[in-house]
Length: 149
Image 1 (cartoon, rainbow, N blue to C red):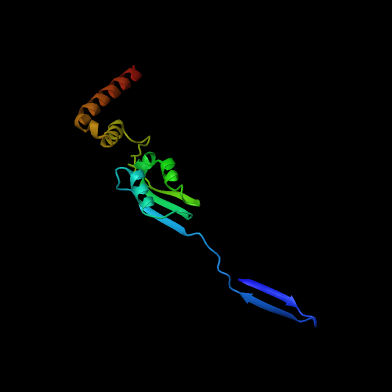
Image 2: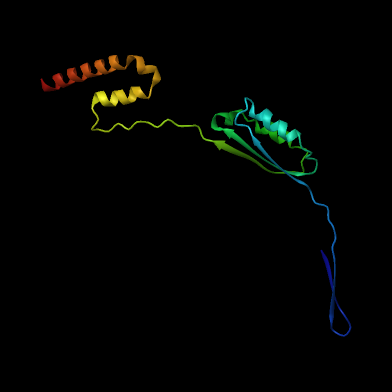
């Protein structure tokens, strides 16, 4: 909008306005869900290449799993956005990895209970659980016997 304000000879003011169209850069906003992709960088690049970014302002938001963070090559993504006038953002949205909750062992837990809780968290020890518990209880009995002597 162009506005002219002029004072006349008699002290009055006149205004005139005119709409002036100005060129604006296009804004290209991309959202890419690459959580299921074997190669998240390739998936994001494919989406970038689908759009005309020449002279545009670009924003890319990509969604990945925590395990994929190291697989995204942001340098290649920035290179692919090179024809854009500006990159407003290259935003990463990460789904955190599912964490296994650890069992809490307190001072009141007995050796057998604490060991069984530990083994329950380790699949590779499941087949030898009873042997581990038996050996631990034998060591505990030996230790207790030595302390009494």
